[in-house]
Image (tube, rainbow, N blue to C red; front, top):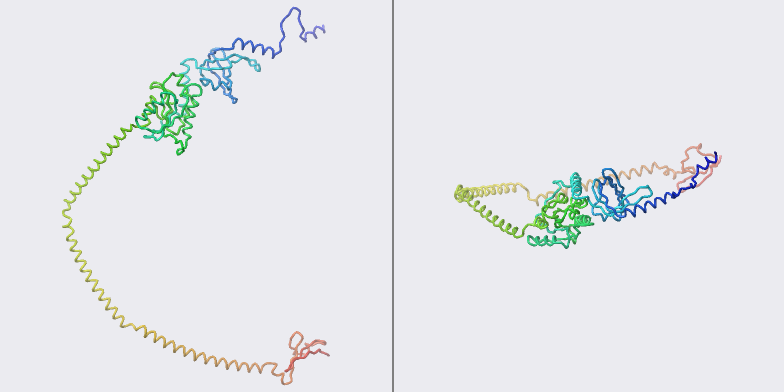
Length: 457
């Protein structure tokens, strides 16, 4: 019993069974090979319910219909080659191959090509994109700018080999020749949208005063075609480039009945490329005629203005009469005033002269004034000299008297009479015996000199 239990825990060959044994990797490889060989090329129609652009550049998509879903992937190298950029909600037809992703045990479609599933799906996608861009304000009327009346430089974004550029250049030459800068681009097919957007951005990046001048207006143009042919001008990258342009843009894509999304973002829509050239410049002959007509009208207006002014002056002159008759009495009054002023001035001059003479008689001659001042100065100088001499004599006598008194009062005056002056070594005069101790050195001054001495008891 225990042996039966133990043997059931392990797998063992069974008699009469030929079922092969596979590892997980082996069965995954076999399934992958079977699926890829069976479904090496398929076309799958469905609605994009999930769309994820990975940082690696790959795009991961989930397709769905009424009852099922299918995972799909488009590798980075193939994404740029797709004619339609995958977006959520699109109904598309994907071409590619089925494979199995062993890491998650699921099958998926590797997309090589992607197209919209019919015109209805395309128009639905365009309508959804139009609503999205309009909600962002890219189509608002207040963003649109007026075109310059007569641009110096016109930039054209179009194919360099088509009839469109020839039509534009021919129409510009007929109306008003201007400098034209053509930025050649592909106008349909793979990479066309990126080229058109790049051309618009590069035109805007040109410096205003560089070697290649920046255009004053841009024309984005191509001829007519199917909806699929015009798809590059419906791409978001182109619409956003037109909306962001600082240079006014004329959209001229397709024929009059064709409509693309850049028509809504452009500042002006032209029904045809030729019409875009007509919108860009006026007719030179018409402009010259207008200038001549304006000049003639201006001349006529000036003539009428001068005639009106002459007539008004004549009316004013008749109203005022002859100016000479008005001025003559004024001239006579002026003569009278002038004569009276002259007489008044002469009288005033005579009175001033008389007063000056009278005042001069009362004023001393400067020579007399100077002579009198010199006499006074000489008298004062004599008095000063006498006073100085008397004072000097008094001061000299006083000094002599003081010297005599000092000589009598000087202690050295009595030395000649036998007295002596006793001083201590410090120079202090000894006036009492109490000031001397035994052994002190003394200085005794006589009238004819001094001697040193030592005090004894």
